[in-house]
Image 1 (tube, rainbow, N blue to C red):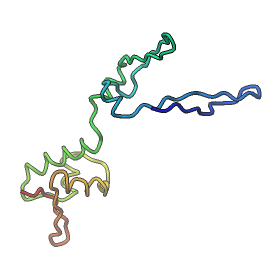
Image 2: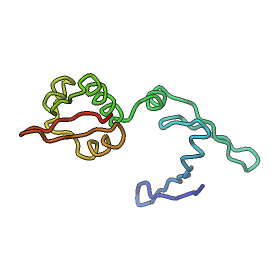
Image 3: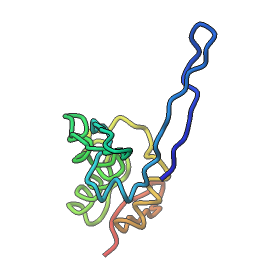
Image 4: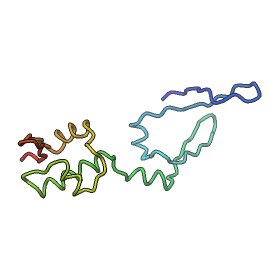
Length: 131
Protein backbone atom coordinates (compact mmCIF):
# COMPACT_ATOMS: atom_id res chain seq x y z
CA UNK A 1 0.00 0.00 0.00
CA UNK A 2 1.23 3.48 -0.73
CA UNK A 3 0.30 6.97 0.43
CA UNK A 4 0.42 9.61 -2.31
CA UNK A 5 0.01 13.38 -2.20
CA UNK A 6 -1.77 15.10 -5.10
CA UNK A 7 -2.24 18.79 -5.82
CA UNK A 8 -5.95 19.60 -5.43
CA UNK A 9 -6.40 23.34 -6.04
CA UNK A 10 -5.16 26.87 -5.29
CA UNK A 11 -7.27 29.25 -3.19
CA UNK A 12 -6.26 32.82 -2.33
CA UNK A 13 -2.70 32.09 -3.39
CA UNK A 14 -2.37 28.98 -1.19
CA UNK A 15 -1.91 25.50 -2.68
CA UNK A 16 -4.01 22.68 -1.23
CA UNK A 17 -3.33 18.97 -1.54
CA UNK A 18 -5.21 15.74 -1.02
CA UNK A 19 -3.72 12.48 0.19
CA UNK A 20 -4.56 9.29 -1.64
CA UNK A 21 -4.16 5.82 -0.18
CA UNK A 22 -3.57 3.26 -2.93
CA UNK A 23 -5.06 -0.11 -1.97
CA UNK A 24 -4.18 -3.11 -4.19
CA UNK A 25 -7.06 -4.77 -6.08
CA UNK A 26 -6.55 -8.12 -4.38
CA UNK A 27 -6.97 -6.45 -0.97
CA UNK A 28 -10.13 -4.63 -2.09
CA UNK A 29 -11.52 -7.94 -3.45
CA UNK A 30 -10.61 -9.80 -0.27
CA UNK A 31 -12.49 -7.19 1.77
CA UNK A 32 -15.52 -7.45 -0.50
CA UNK A 33 -15.44 -3.73 -1.24
CA UNK A 34 -16.84 -2.29 -4.48
CA UNK A 35 -16.40 0.89 -6.50
CA UNK A 36 -18.69 3.54 -5.04
CA UNK A 37 -18.72 2.20 -1.45
CA UNK A 38 -18.63 4.92 1.21
CA UNK A 39 -15.45 4.50 3.26
CA UNK A 40 -15.69 5.62 6.87
CA UNK A 41 -12.59 5.97 9.00
CA UNK A 42 -11.60 6.33 12.61
CA UNK A 43 -8.24 6.84 14.25
CA UNK A 44 -7.55 4.86 17.40
CA UNK A 45 -4.18 4.99 19.14
CA UNK A 46 -2.38 6.05 15.97
CA UNK A 47 -4.06 3.34 13.88
CA UNK A 48 -6.31 4.15 10.92
CA UNK A 49 -9.41 1.92 10.75
CA UNK A 50 -11.40 1.82 7.51
CA UNK A 51 -14.90 0.44 7.01
CA UNK A 52 -16.87 0.31 3.76
CA UNK A 53 -20.60 0.85 3.59
CA UNK A 54 -22.26 -0.17 0.32
CA UNK A 55 -24.29 2.46 -1.54
CA UNK A 56 -27.03 1.86 -4.13
CA UNK A 57 -24.52 2.76 -6.85
CA UNK A 58 -21.84 0.37 -5.55
CA UNK A 59 -24.39 -2.45 -5.32
CA UNK A 60 -25.41 -1.84 -8.95
CA UNK A 61 -21.78 -1.80 -10.07
CA UNK A 62 -21.09 -5.04 -8.19
CA UNK A 63 -23.74 -6.97 -10.13
CA UNK A 64 -23.34 -5.19 -13.48
CA UNK A 65 -21.85 -7.05 -16.39
CA UNK A 66 -19.12 -5.66 -18.56
CA UNK A 67 -20.61 -4.26 -21.83
CA UNK A 68 -18.43 -6.69 -23.80
CA UNK A 69 -19.83 -9.63 -21.81
CA UNK A 70 -23.42 -8.54 -22.54
CA UNK A 71 -22.62 -8.16 -26.25
CA UNK A 72 -20.79 -11.51 -26.39
CA UNK A 73 -23.60 -13.36 -24.61
CA UNK A 74 -26.28 -11.91 -26.91
CA UNK A 75 -24.29 -12.77 -30.05
CA UNK A 76 -23.75 -16.30 -28.72
CA UNK A 77 -27.49 -16.81 -28.05
CA UNK A 78 -28.43 -15.67 -31.56
CA UNK A 79 -25.79 -17.83 -33.25
CA UNK A 80 -26.69 -20.91 -31.18
CA UNK A 81 -30.21 -20.69 -32.66
CA UNK A 82 -28.77 -20.42 -36.19
CA UNK A 83 -26.13 -23.16 -36.65
CA UNK A 84 -25.61 -22.23 -40.33
CA UNK A 85 -24.76 -18.69 -39.30
CA UNK A 86 -25.92 -15.16 -40.00
CA UNK A 87 -24.48 -12.04 -41.54
CA UNK A 88 -23.73 -9.02 -39.34
CA UNK A 89 -26.78 -7.27 -40.86
CA UNK A 90 -29.02 -10.15 -39.81
CA UNK A 91 -27.54 -10.22 -36.29
CA UNK A 92 -28.04 -6.44 -36.02
CA UNK A 93 -31.68 -6.81 -37.02
CA UNK A 94 -32.38 -9.65 -34.56
CA UNK A 95 -30.71 -7.82 -31.67
CA UNK A 96 -31.97 -4.38 -32.77
CA UNK A 97 -28.46 -2.91 -32.71
CA UNK A 98 -27.80 0.52 -34.14
CA UNK A 99 -24.06 0.23 -34.62
CA UNK A 100 -23.01 -0.03 -38.25
CA UNK A 101 -20.15 -2.42 -37.63
CA UNK A 102 -19.07 -4.34 -34.52
CA UNK A 103 -16.06 -3.22 -32.51
CA UNK A 104 -13.15 -5.11 -34.12
CA UNK A 105 -11.39 -5.88 -30.82
CA UNK A 106 -14.55 -7.45 -29.41
CA UNK A 107 -14.94 -9.57 -32.54
CA UNK A 108 -11.38 -10.88 -32.18
CA UNK A 109 -11.99 -11.58 -28.49
CA UNK A 110 -15.21 -13.48 -29.29
CA UNK A 111 -13.26 -15.72 -31.64
CA UNK A 112 -11.38 -16.98 -28.57
CA UNK A 113 -14.14 -16.69 -25.95
CA UNK A 114 -17.11 -18.30 -27.73
CA UNK A 115 -15.52 -19.86 -30.80
CA UNK A 116 -16.85 -17.26 -33.23
CA UNK A 117 -15.99 -18.14 -36.82
CA UNK A 118 -16.39 -15.67 -39.68
CA UNK A 119 -16.40 -17.17 -43.15
CA UNK A 120 -16.52 -15.39 -46.47
CA UNK A 121 -19.25 -16.87 -48.70
CA UNK A 122 -19.76 -15.18 -52.04
CA UNK A 123 -19.91 -11.46 -51.16
CA UNK A 124 -21.04 -11.97 -47.56
CA UNK A 125 -19.31 -12.72 -44.30
CA UNK A 126 -21.16 -15.36 -42.30
CA UNK A 127 -20.83 -15.45 -38.52
CA UNK A 128 -21.29 -18.78 -36.81
CA UNK A 129 -20.03 -20.74 -33.84
CA UNK A 130 -17.53 -23.56 -34.14
CA UNK A 131 -18.53 -26.99 -32.77
